Image (cartoon, rainbow over the protein chains, first blue to last red):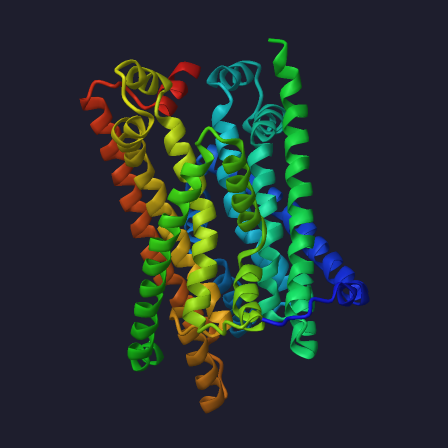
Amino acid sequence: MGYNFQTSYILDNADALLRGLLMTAQVSGISIGLAALIGIVCASIKIFNVPVLSKIVGGYVYFIRSTPLLPQIFFIFYGLPSLGLGFSIYWSGVLALSLWGGAYNTENVRGGFLAISKGLKEASSALGFKPIHYLCFVAIPLGVRVSVPSMLNTSVSVLKNSAYLSTIGFAELTFVAMERVAQEFRTLEMFAAICALYLTLVLALSALVRVIERHLERPFKET
Amino acid sequence: MDLIQNNAPIFINGLLETFQLSAVTLFFAIVLSLFFGVLSVTRYRIFKIISICYVELFRDIPLLVNVFFVYFGAPLIGIPLEPFAAATISLSLWGGANGAEIVRSGFNSVSNHQKASAKALGLKPWEIFWYVIGPQALLPMIPPFTGLFSLLIQATALCSMVGEMEFFRMAQIVVERTTINTGYSPAFLVYGFVLIVYFVICASLAALTKRLERWLSERQDRRGAGLPAVERLAQESV
């Protein structure tokens, strides 16, 4: 029971923790962006029912959503090199997280696209818009707007899931903490520190979600 | 394929352990989520705050950190834990936080006039809760809880990181052993196989969830309650 909690230990290691935090922020930032891109592209494919591609996208989304992320990461990092597709730790991590977030974002954006009323599509084809024009000028601005809150929730999950990358040796926050713990055994301090950091990041992002949600609702409030 | 056939007993043992772990975890998660879910729908503000803090804390910290915290932190305060126990504790806490949200929305889905009518009939508060609100809130919670079970099965893969001998850990062992013995890494095959097995399990659970949902909505229709609120809303907006 006599565990001596040393707050100063956290401060002594602030440098290392900060480096880990930056790596976490960096990899999740890139993955969040790529995941949003994947989500928009795949949702567009699904909404237009592109013959073969939409089946592939459907399979991809279903597969990613029904398998755990950790084996996915291991598959990408340890499995793909035997096909000649070796990625570095960093890019394996980015790939795994983006594919994971992309699958969820596809569903989010598709929900947004489905919320656009049919009349707009008919109106744009009456105006002679090609499908690509409808997509770029009508569907994406309106549909993505509707799906932004759920996409941001997925982004929060991506941020949390970046902790999984520590298992393949990615030097992010959890990895840094585990390394210190393995050397100096100040487990409680380290974990308290990273819990606080993750909580801060996630709560900050969720606060941002709420601000953006309110901002997006504004044009529709008058009507 | 030979590799997987030769190691079939290992994989089956791992799979059994995975099921065992997720079933035990589901049980504790349901207990926790009922407790905190009910706390969040009480009238008392302090209980609500406690419940919100619990839910936010365990949903916002990455599950991996949670698992490590329990496994490596427990010995320091004098309770060394087996991997299985540590995994059960951390996954249950996490599942309980997710389940509490399900329970809360289940209770919120019971329309307010049910409570008002029960009150008008002169029922005591606990009677209202036990005979009127509870039974109606419980049924809509079933499909989300099967979804949670699927999430818990997926989450057990994490416990391989603290040495729990479940399915994914077994796969890692097979990969490592074969790499050492033959010098050739079967990671692609074995991890691909692992993904497919998880996919089959979770996809069948998802199919079950869908059937339960349909059964529930049909049941609601038969009872003359009309469509569930969500579908009614969707129709209105068209």
